[in-house]
Image (cartoon, rainbow, N blue to C red; front, top):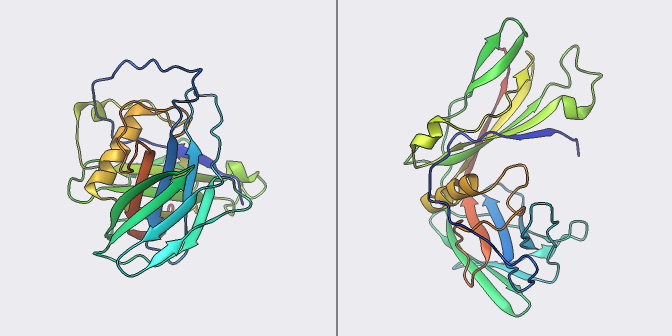
Length: 272
């Protein structure tokens, strides 16, 4: 797998009341099961990531390798299998259907955690727009999506590759690839106007960009709003155990089970 630079560009941050949180860092009792399950309607394998929560940013989350993972609906039952090469990752093939409720059930050490979700329908979207820097001779992303979309929230994943552009072919892969995420959520707030500074990436003409849109339900969008508000992208969801992030899993498990309809398009930067 090619290495690439991953940038998380947060385009929507909302204010909230921060609660003082002083956990007992020495106690193992406070650990919780964290389940990440974002499935798409694409005809491929979907995965569930299951780990123990951690309390400090530098701690490494321990994978859970002895869980039982089942996806069920009114007309099928799918059993996930542990990936032998990736601890804590469970995989299964499926074809998600519209207007149908799915239940994800995870059993860990005698405890059962479950969540329900329906597929958020995919939606066509416009290609991103760019601005050009005459000094640098590079293009910069100008607009990917509106940051506020109360009716159709979504995550946009942009995969950029300029390894075949003249002048860049001899560079290492991590200098010619990038993955960028934009969020278009269903709530707007004043803190969106003053987001944290983020690094801008310039792209040479000829860069190939694949843009994939992941549709979100309203509750899934609210989950991501809270993730963006409470956590640092540098550490990821498992870096700390946030105090206020919602979960749709039962029995106090952390994480989210979401079903995303996807749509995608490709553009060549600088091409008219």
